[in-house]
Each structure stands twice: as C-alpha cells, then as structure tokens.
Length: 266
Ligand code: SAH
Image 1 (cartoon, protein in one colour):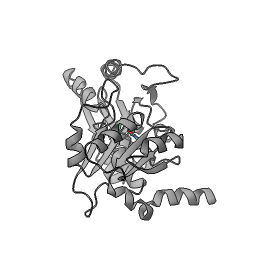
Image 2: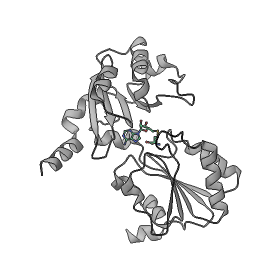
Image 3: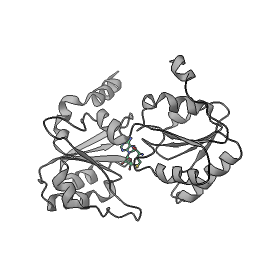
Image 4: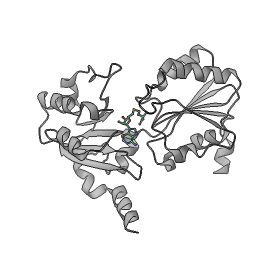
C-alpha cells in the first residue's frame, strides 16, 4: 500500500482536486481520495459526505461546508466555484469532495469547466457512484445476464426541479433496468410515465435509502405501488429508485442487510 501511495502524484499548492467520496461507507474511498484528504489545506464538501470521511483529513485541513443547511438555501453553484478558484489562487491545496462520483449527477463537469476556464490546475478522482456501489450493498446487481444487457441512469429532476424532459417512451421501451437518482420527490409521476409507456404495473421496484451506511433501508414494491409504499415507509432521501427484474435477485444477495442485522443482534 505504501508503494502505491508513494506513487500518487503530488497535490500541488494552488490546485483543486475534484474528489468522489463514494456512496457513504468510508471503506469505499479510493486510495487517491484517502491520500488527498490527508494532504489538503482546505476541503469544500457537500451534504452527502459522512462525518467519518471528513475525519480522515489531516490536522491542518480546514473544512468548508457547501451544501444546504438548516433550511437555508444552498450556496449558488457559481459561489462555490468562485470559492474554489479564490482558495487555489491563495496557493491552497483544495479538495472539492462530492458524494459518489463527481461526474454523475454531481455538477462536477460544471465545476471542472470553470476551473479550466480560469487556468486553475485540477485533477478528478472518480468515486463509486451510489447507483453502482449502493446497489451492490442493496443486493441488486446492476446487470445480470438473464435479465438485462443495458441500464439507464436517470435523474428524477432537472435544473428547474421538475421531472426531466427525456423521451420516456424510449427509456421505458429501451432500458430493462432504470436507476433513478434524486427521484423520490417525483416517484409518482416517474412510475406513472413508465407504466403509460408500456412497463408492467407489477414490475419490481426497489427504493434504496442511505445505501452503504448503517441506516440503509430498502422498500421493495412494484411500479403501481411504489409511490404509496415510499410514503407509508416514512423514510427520507437520499435514495435511489431501481426499476427492473434485477430487483428480484435481492432476497438471495442482500449480504449487507444480513450483516447489519447480525451487528444489531451482537
Ligand atoms: N454524484 C452522486 C450523485 C449526486 S445526486 C453519485 O455518484 O452517487 C444525489 C443523489 O444521489 C441522491 O438524491 C440519491 O438519489 C443518490 N444518492 C447518493 N448517495 C446515496 C446513498 N448513500 N443512498 C441512496 N442514494 C444516494
């Protein structure tokens, strides 16, 4: 391990590393992310990043929160990127830490483009996206030879907060497995659209809350009942909605839930 860590490129003062923190479980950080956390002068982080990951920073790292707090609106995207630029220009080693992977529904692309436009040196450290790692912990393989050769990642709302204006018919007909990020608020209209475009009302759906953490909870339902079942569960996002036959493999593959249950018994 030391051999690998010694080969990690130096974190130069005045640069920004856009780092994926993974879905929650600190063990899912990459070695690059771990090393960067220990070296950073300033860490600008999002709401989805857990405390145990933040605690991996070195003693001198300053932590700056860039998400929503206490009902206050979140800082504007521009303000966050401006802040990254200002810190880099002060000669700091800056980490912009994001949940999951920075380039999957994380606005990492926008931030990187602005850094590039301002000639700030940057590096992107990919993370395990919740739609990949979270599903593994939920006991749901994203692809499975007998059920699907394709998968679609979808966001449940666009920049204006509405259900995105995608071609729902193509998605319903073309993608046997659909993973929806940020979709709980609009779960009723999402499931209705898929049914309207030909998906079976009885198709399996799993809603995976707080995947990979000790609070992971999963609601298993059908397209017709998912919205109602989520409401009844009283569980709160972050959550992923998984639609497709792969959900049916869960009873045999829910290793993490079994592990959590055994922890509670001990
Ligand atoms: N870049 C992130 C996604 C950011 S969008 C990634 O790659 O995972 C935020 C959405 O991600 C949440 O609304 C939720 O749908 C999903 N998400 C992130 N972490 C999650 C977790 N631990 N459990 C369930 N969903 C999660």
